[in-house]
Image (cartoon, rainbow, N blue to C red; front, side, top):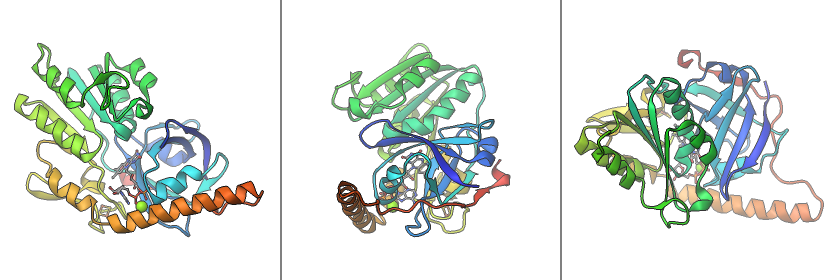
Length: 307
Ligand code: FAD
Ligand code: FES
Ligand code: MG
């Protein structure tokens, strides 16, 4: 099974949407689950990405990613019709969905993408839904139309006030908690610092808050320990025990420290990637082929136990 890119769209300066052929995963996936993707067998690194949407009939999954470093920058260079080497999934426990009553979903930056299937499922289950979308600036606001169509209330905030309200996501979240109709449950997905403060905001009001953790992952099977976090004083592996946890129990400071572990290597890979992109640009100007080699004939791997 070839994981061909069926559609590619640039949503903002650094954010890309791709529909990728993966029929077995499209059939099995549930909201909150993710894949591990390998772009090519030479470059090798495996990265986790949330399944933002899927269509079982047509056999594709949708990923939305921010080109932040070596692998995501290389993935952003892939074009429609090319194929990535491997897609493993669906991984992780699905989100627990039921009619909680009033639910608030807080998505920060690229965290809005993983939030989308959860928003869809919560609405389908009958929840009254408030969605708070936060971004550094207007350019980085994604999925606004899609969220507006589903949510009962959509609040957009930007750090610089270039769109929506000039605030951090925690401001409207606190107001909701203090309102006459506080949420029965909150979901927060975004940078760890945002999830830390979203959980700290809801805690005094006793609003149960689920967060989806974006730790470093390698194998995605619970074997390597790369995704280790401390939740309620216990060691958990995000790939097999998560990715969602009770935000009031997560040791975010430890998680953020661990995310810095490979900073020198990541900086080097990003630098090399920018150099590669520049070489490709020069090659293209000369009418020569680009350097990256899309893989043909790779296998799709499903994890039936997660289906
Ligand atoms: P690098 O420069 O290598 O890393 C940039 C930062 O990304 C690092 O500092 C680290 O914080 C993190 N990171 C690096 N390597 C990994 C790795 N192997 N696994 C996890 N994090 C890593 N991003 C999206 O844009 N869209 C998504 O839908 C999405 N879903 C995710 C779901 C899960 C369950 C997890 C754990 C992460 C998710 N991420 C998502 C984050 C994404 O995996 C990282 O941005 C990506 O791995 C960065 O790789 P890079 O080589 O481009 O950047
Ligand atoms: Fe290796 Fe979770 S990614 S244990
Ligand atoms: Mg990397």
